[in-house]
Image (tube, rainbow, N blue to C red):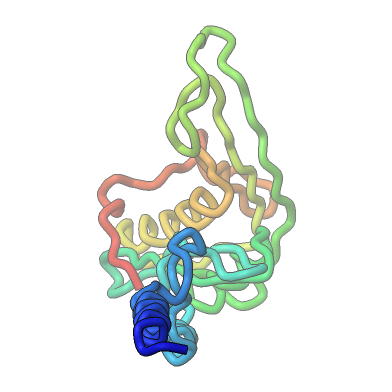
Length: 201
């Protein structure tokens, strides 16, 4: 083998090695690179350390439903508490209202049902929960008792805690409240706008 041929072979090998070193390790068509394992683990740990009540209520916990309860924060205003429950029904709501001191221990649900009435004169589709429209969802709740209230403000706080909790969780337009079968008011209760601006927990 003469020197010229040997030189050509060495040049070809050098060019091939350079091309391999400069080529990308994977095709861009494979998609973005996976994040490092330690980054994924840190993100999962960070989310796990956030108390359930402090997480974004719009992000539903796997297998759990959002539970919204209103309670008195200082005797003059309402506090909206968001948490999670395996399922949300009237008993869960009343149990939470008892836990937060809105209702008294021993308060029983005698009955609860929801009626939805369509407005035959309306040509507009319903605009959603508590938004009016072509239909109205009313809850009918009969409790065994209600706590005694010292004044009108305390009474309104109590009624708004009960009404707001049921309206939020069942997407109601109003709540018809009874005590031992006797209607509490002539018309369904709704959230009083005076107490609409509530604090969040």
